[in-house]
Image 1 (cartoon, rainbow, N blue to C red):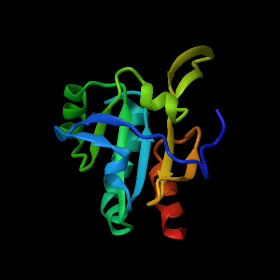
Image 2 (spheres, helix red, strand yellow):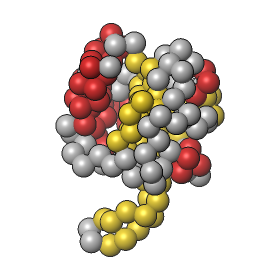
Image 3 (cartoon, helix red, strand yellow):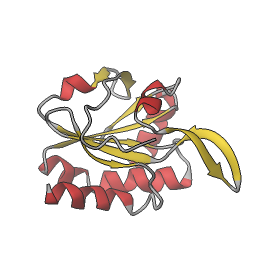
Image 4 (cartoon, rainbow, N blue to C red):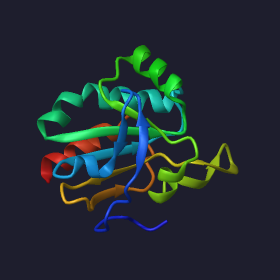
Amino acid sequence: MTSLEGMQAPDFELEGSNGKKHALHDYRGKTVVIYFYPKDNTPGCTKEACGFRDLHQELQGLDAVLLGVSKDSLKSHDKFIRDFGLPFVLLSDPDAKMMQAYGAFGEKVMYGKKTMGTIRSTVVVGPDGKVVKHWQTVKKAEDHPAVVVDFLRQK
């Protein structure tokens, strides 16, 4: 997958943990951070989510909307949110269509074996709907939220 930077972000419509449908065009005029992660309540995903939780007020202060996306069900998202006090919406993409459009689903190596799955990655979509930053793979889940906030501060 090539970087999406400079391209129009693919639109989507997914169910959110707040009981509403969410589409990219709903956020026109805002900066949207969309982070893709493999699975609720797993060590790396929990560290990343808690990092975004801890920086959520700062993200809001930078006028950015944060959305997390995985294949998990809304029921799973509800438990994840409850267990860790996550103050942002998680979207359920059970068929991985949105993740595929963003290059966040495909072949990856886990424990030395090639497998198909969610690729931990993040995009920042500008107010005009174009991708201004694309982290195609996130290596250190626990450090990534701070990297995103640093990028937004410099924008």
